[in-house]
Length: 388
Image (cartoon, rainbow, N blue to C red; front, side, top):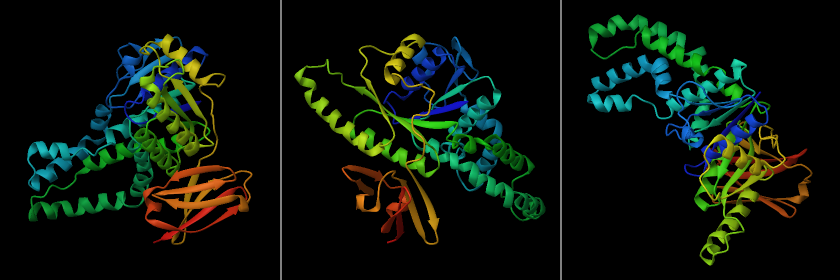
């Protein structure tokens, strides 16, 4: 059983690459479903088919589904939302403002992602391909189950008991809305729906993420930030897909500057994401649509690689706390301590190993700190950060 998450900046061709990978895997014999959790669904357009909230057969061994996140949000979060609306109206917000403010941004995407576990547990599929929303926030919000588990185990029972006790008193003293049993039941349904999702998606033997980029400076910068937070929260990137490269056959002088800039950015991609492999896809001469054409595109992209395989094992780095210090641990096989040089620059750590250099974009928790030291421990470089 394999799960592939495709993410990237909007407009880079993420949906096309995800759909193509699913189409090729199905052609090669895997029972495959491709899911869209992007609120601006375009997966159906890629397959030239009508997709909805239930799986639709697109080809032999291939199904597609565009998840209706709003329906799931109302089912599991409706009572909580209504309670928040009542509190906001009591505080002075008008009806429209209260309705808009009651929906937590990103929650609908998290609910949609919980359907991945449903597909994985069904036994109907060998491969689940997920076309994620075009933002790293979708992935970062998957830390929510851990926070919610802590709340459900330590705070939820006591809070529910306390609310039942003070509800009659507050009802006589003030007209502020007090959460009833329906609200707590809604929180319980919310927790149950997300239970196990993070564990499944951070299991590198099952789930890996693939970043889709165009060779453009802003796109590459966002992809690097996304990779940083994927690693920070325990998700594993096994490939980067550089999409829409100008082919060598394009020789018009007007494109020479574009080709030079693309080459420059591809060097940044190779340097920044190493040792994760970078797959290259040239700009197609026509629109890619339909299962057959998508599968052909994916075959050219993957070459001899199994599209459902794991192209790289291990996370680029991990961060752990040691007292008041935070330690970033990088895997640098075959590097001796004397071979490694280290520098900081503009929110990045620059690591040089012999003739090779790598720039790692730091998460916000480390940008605010300074490097206090570094050491090699076996095949890992450990960098200590302290409060500045």
